[in-house]
Length: 234
Image (cartoon, rainbow, N blue to C red; front, side, top):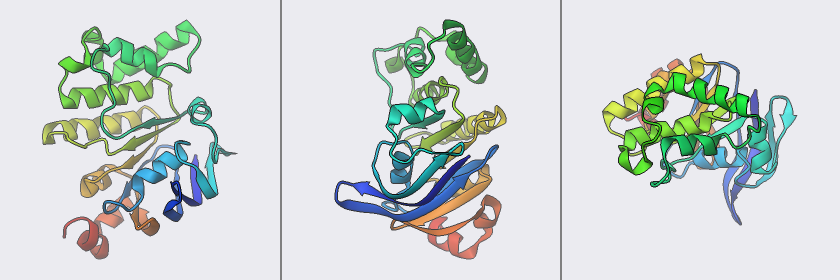
């Protein structure tokens, strides 16, 4: 589904990724973990077309999308949920979801997309006139996630989704990611809560200083003594 092959990317002249490779298959949750500054978020931004890929190749659904404009990548069905709960305080839940459906031109199709999202997040339907500034941090993250699903993506990229959330909301969030996988949408997750991310994942990659360090089935990485010692706190 998604194949990232030896990509080199960064910010201006500052190279962050030095040939990173990974893949996501249908029906998978894949986690990308590693220390701060390893390049995890940079990978997502390069895949999503936010950052330029200087060399290497990104392939999505058997089509090379390297350095496609972001809007074209979204139209292909790849949705990126950025770090930091990007919501607009004075906009309602309904307005956020309408904004997320910008690629959908047909009104009936948009209504179907909305109902699919409401089936995953029923409380959003009940409170759709509520403004974002009236919501808790956890609720805002759910709204951000729901908005990313409005384009009916074929793949969802999540950048640090648990950032700033209470333990209660972290559990709700990851359970919801499992539901999203169950609805047929695979996920690529960058996450600092590495052990938790691997517990919910099928496969994992460990980055260090912009390079691949480890990869494998998530359950095997959780048991790998080097991964545990270096990245999972024991």
